[in-house]
Image (cartoon, rainbow, N blue to C red):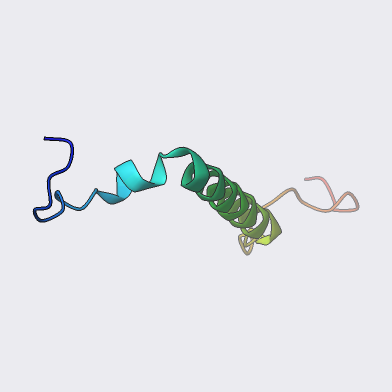
Length: 63
């Protein structure tokens, strides 16, 4: 049974392939870089300020 010469077994799924030790380190680093890049990009986006809203200027006359 150990020396069977038939067709190879089913190809592994991507998850099984990615979780084996040599590939898992590369997948982890790629995911880490992606998360860092997305968070950096999200942090660089400036929120739009609403027009006409906000506190009045300090020198505004009081009624």
